[in-house]
Length: 485
Image (cartoon, rainbow, N blue to C red; front, top):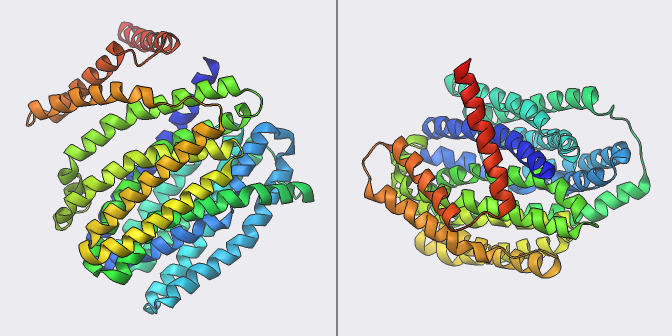
């Protein structure tokens, strides 16, 4: 189980750093939403949406190709690093022009255009910092990510607070984002130079062409995926009111923060999948099946808890003026469940050099999203955008699952779903039955009952059960020793 232990260790490192990021982001959203109000928060969301749509063009998939190929050929790290930097330099310039041009097309006030320029610079610095993170992922040393990322997140929250105190408006908020990404770049460069290799210019034209050739489908995939996250906001701005735009943006920002769970688990798995998919198909199938099972086990209680506490979560994070969007929150929570698996399935296709099918799936889903937005938003406003997102995520799940299990030697996970539904139903029933009691006690009791049901229904095989027992013995043994001392 050495491989399992390494995956779990790396997943925990990434999850802990991203959990800190999500906490910081939620705090920042709460501060920004209250500071700007619904309509100005909609303007902020519009600029952020434009930046997010184009930001994935900055590397055009070079980072994921870098991770995949360096995991297989670590001796060529400098050649792949040089190729990635050159590709990012070219596309980063293009992204800066596209962001400013798109925002200018809407004839915004001068301060919005300035915010877009700062946001475009922040996007470029973000991808430079992510290239440093890609080095850590390729070597499966994700602990360094847990050092680098929180530094930038802390700078971000600090400067958001400063921008609010001094009333610097939307421009000040985007400046905080730029400072975050610059600080992450400085930390990443220092860690790589000290612990891995000294970055040097080492141009290999065949590797440069390979990174571009293999990366562009991933880049297009990522760009389309980002567009699908933000296209609803653009259609709301064009077809609905500023209030609808602000309500949808606030709720959707909360949902997107929770992506950190599957994104970081799959980031830890990506270099492993990349190696195993070429020559070790049996082990690849085993590791992939366990990854899906882990994601299923974690997703059910998370979604159930979010659905039950939607009103309280909106009130705490965004304030009571956003409470009318509780139904939207519940629709997007269902989308979140599909999103978790879509991230894993897309990463699986990318790791196995089947990225073109991931790109095709994302393109079709985006088409459904745009069509549904055009039909639903004029009639139902922000709820129409929510339904469009749900339909698009369902289409994407069906397509990516089909390509993963038809083109790769992997075992479908559908047989495990009834066990999870039964266990989750018992847990939710317990929460409803004892509603109004101590919430912490109910969470702990519900978690205990949920995992007990999974154990009874034999969700875990013999090897997994033995591993879990060993971990529990080590945990409780350590606690006993600490009490003894």
